[in-house]
Amino acid sequence: MRDKTAIVGVGCCKFGENWGQSREDMMVEAAYQAYEDAGIDNPQKQIEAVFCGVVYPNFSTGEVADALRFYDRPISHVQNYCATGTDAFRFGAFGVAAGVYDTVLVLGYDKPKDRGVSGPSVAFDRVRGLPATPAGWFSLCAARYFDTFGADRSDLAKIAVKNHHNGTLAPNSMLKREITVDDVLNARMISWPFGLYDCAAQSDGAAAAIITRADKAKDFRDDFVLVKAVAIALGENPQTDPDFDFLRWKPTEYAARQAYEMAGISKPFDEIDVAQVHDCFTLTELLTYEDLGFIEKGAAREHIASGTFELDGELPVNTDGGLKTFGHPTGATGVRMIYENVLQLRGQAGPRQVKGATTALSHNIGGAPQACGITILGTP
Image (cartoon, rainbow, N blue to C red; front, side):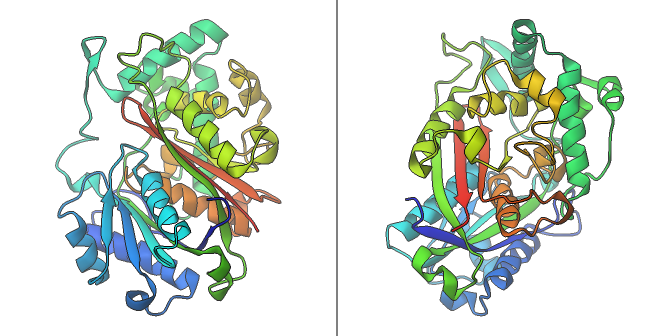
């Protein structure tokens, strides 16, 4: 898999409460940005297959075919919790790497704001036999982490402050507001220890990527980005796993092991320059620092305090604001992370650019959480 495929175009619409755009509008905007980025002037002839990540489809693949005027070719939908966009990218990359296609489009999209409900239609009803919301479930892990390693709400608050700052620098992000630690600590409580600013913003949005064979990448552009690894792993359902200790997400550890082996990475903290991770809650980002092997278990508090994961730190994380402020249209999030990492590796991320970035990681986790997707990209 390593270095067999390349990304030659990316696109992303503005994430947010996009009342003025239909699902098709967002798909077209993201896809045509990617075509222009790749120098594709006749997508109906140059794109051989489409792989879509969507959690809340209206009319399955038909809505994509009609929106993009793609007929007489395969269009596939992928759905895998919050790892949906990453999994769609995996199918596209594997199709090209296997020699089935030369060039494909990966499209992640969702428009939950028009679904008539406030928030995701997710209810955990089997958490040790008791009902719980996503915030309620994840907050149990925060409480256990605090008790075990001495962290507190102020540590989570610093993650929110970081991601809000980074989001102000990303043109397509949903929330553009600087906040302080006091703002986070004094915000309306959602599920202790999570206040309002500890929770990601669900949004509408679409993102796209063009994948082609590595040996054809220069036909599109010189600064193409290589796919080093893409992995999906499932873990035991933590809500019923007797070995779950509330201090780690096993799917992240499993997927990271696969991805690092595929990419030839043995020291992720030293070998990865920038990362986009799944911060559905601030605690999720904290655990992910450790589950990805960036730092030792229990060491997050120290690194948060020293600024390790800030834009000017040793390993910047969520450079565009993450789910927290860029937004989280479930099916699009994994592809949006790839979009950001491609910009970073090309040196096109503007004021949030990580200097000298050559290797980038993206990470999604979803469900119980039970599924995790990781993609590693690199410059030639």
